[in-house]
Length: 215
Image 1 (cartoon, helix red, strand yellow):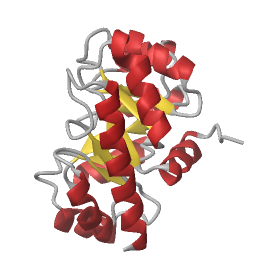
Image 2: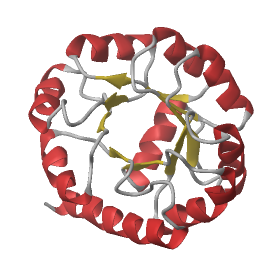
Image 3: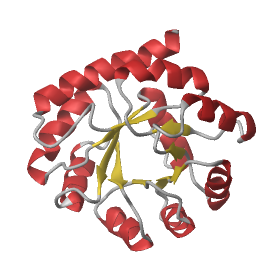
Image 4: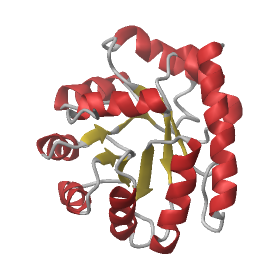
């Protein structure tokens, strides 16, 4: 049975596949074929950033079509954004920054909150506000060495997911530093990339993620 507690829900989906698909620029017309390709490849976390065309329409389609996935929005900047995503059927709230108001609104609605952090101060504040995991962003600045240092001081159960410029070749280094998963953007999907290509890329990334568990 799929858990309903947001923290347990996030852990369950990360255990199934530790990749968050960041579908920036996705259109409603692409939502179902791209979503199908990702789900068929094994992904279970799908994020449509709110600066995409008609993002709430895409989120609504994905959430209805793929109940086995945790679907939601990225670039969520205000409590009103959180409420709109919730009304569309989304259960995942991802942000590039930490806003206490956004995290608390997501928690109040029973949604998974993944705020963006880049420093220990932000990380501890986000966890205190109720965040269920931490998006380490941008990963180009928050290196594996930084993640390892954060892991040494944060609560053991804190979930850390680097995001930004992540490709298949990078996964093992991040996993060795203590990453629980990764947000994958342009190396998986970008506007104009067809669903078949997205599926091929997804399978490569899923295999690479699985390989980090055996390393």
